[in-house]
Image (cartoon, rainbow, N blue to C red; front, side):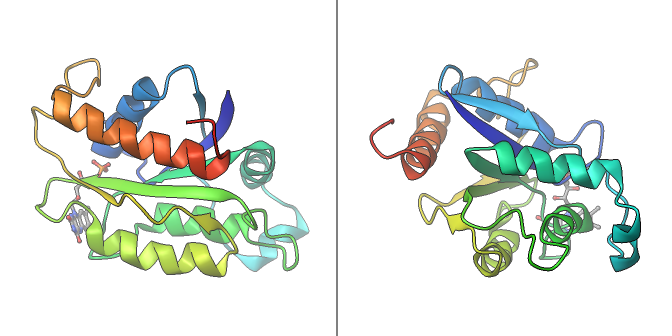
Length: 181
Ligand SMILES: Cc1cc2nc3c(=O)[nH]c(=O)nc-3n(C[C@H](O)[C@H](O)[C@H](O)COP(=O)(O)O)c2cc1C
């Protein structure tokens, strides 16, 4: 079983990205253990390191202990929400103590719009690369979220979509540990 630190870039109670992450967790059952990181962090400020916030230290601990990182993020104004960026920034510092370096990472996201977070993902990839992460290149997964995508218990309702998402999780597993998926 691989330990996956999951970053959901929305704090909203009814977040579709949170629901989508839960659906991925179900599809990954038995091989990927999802550990959701608390993303409700103080806004990044270099002065915080004088007395580091417990939540940021916990994020760094979870990432350090993880075999891989899964980012499930909304798209805000054709970019990543501050919640996602704030977590990436927090984990990258203090200077020289970037916790993201060398971590395998996969990125996806859901939006009610037709492009399904594609623009956000292309931007975030460049940030992940500069952080020194090992970014899964393919498949790209852009979810255009419609009400019938998930059942009430956040299971992927459509067989073809479930198969496609399982393929994404297979690729991520293989990216972390070749031969495991
Ligand atoms: C400030 C803001 C900007 C947004 N910009 C985009 C956007 O650029 N592209 C898009 O597809 N959806 C955009 N949306 C709509 C979000 O995709 C939608 O609110 C989605 O439900 C947010 O994800 P969540 O449900 O996980 O919180 C935006 C929403 C907000 C609040």
